[in-house]
Amino acid sequence: MKRGERKAAPGVPFDEDSLRGRSAQFLKWCAVQNLSPATVYSWKCLLKNFCDWCAERNVERPSDVTRQLLEQYQTGLFHRRKKNGEPLAFQTQYGALVAVKQMFRWLTRHDLVLSNPASDLQMPKVPKRLPVDVLNAKEVELVMEAVVLDEERHGLRDRAMLEVLYSTGMRRAELCRLGLYDVDHHRGVATIRSGKGQKDRVIPIGERALSWVARYVADERPRWAAKQETNDHDQVLFLGQDGFPLRADSISGLVHSYVVKANIGKVGSAHLLRHTMATLMLEGGADIRFIQMMLGHANLSTTEIYTHVSIGQLKDVHNRAHPGARLGHAALDEETKTVLAAVFNEDAGDDT
Image (tube, rainbow, N blue to C red):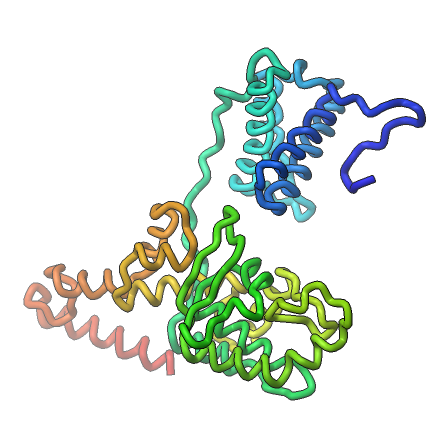
């Protein structure tokens, strides 16, 4: 029996008309429709939580679920606390409700319920957050230099991974699946297969990243690939020392450790390099639509967050266009300029 499924009593068939039974049928339909395995697994966990919540209130069938009950569930999500005492993020609450809404939409379309109680459920507004930290070019180099190229360990692999993440901005899950032959050294491109939304895309990869990948493939990877004689994943580019592909959480942990080791006063993991790539490209003059293609965003509005992060160009425009932006402008009297100059000089001395 798979994890998360309720075991039927001996001799008693599983009730397919129950809320749990219908949720299992919905998940099978999602798989048939080629939704990503990650989405199906996530919805499976979320719907199990919903079914458990309903069972505690003696609600066992989809027809017993009302709009009022769903609003109570939504309120419960808002008041739920994690183990550390923090509330669930609105993004998490939103995702839990989406799974329920999609299931009842499917139930309605297949005439398994008379009406959809979730059709008019008002969803919580998810705030658009800016990335907490973004690295500048100098800080990126410090992170790269934090990797120790020890022949007995995995320095070449880690440096190659960091360079690929920084050069392409691919997601950590995409890096996990990146194939040995998905990197075309001659054309200078990388093919990302089954990215978010099950979409493939081809993106450029820089010469520096390619050179580190070549060194890793020649010097480190063969030792680990040989450890698994019947390895079904032998075509995956980045392997662990056991010969199996790296997991997404392992990649995040490695990147995080190098960011901390660089001692730049910032934290982050694999997504930090994705944000950094997009922000530095935008500040370098790249059109936002090209960045959208690099990141694999379905909507331009998702990419536009980097117009807020990229403060460098905005500061240049502000200095050129705002009458009071510069210290030496005529609008400031001599006494004010003297005071401000002394403050800035004092601050600069503290930094050294």
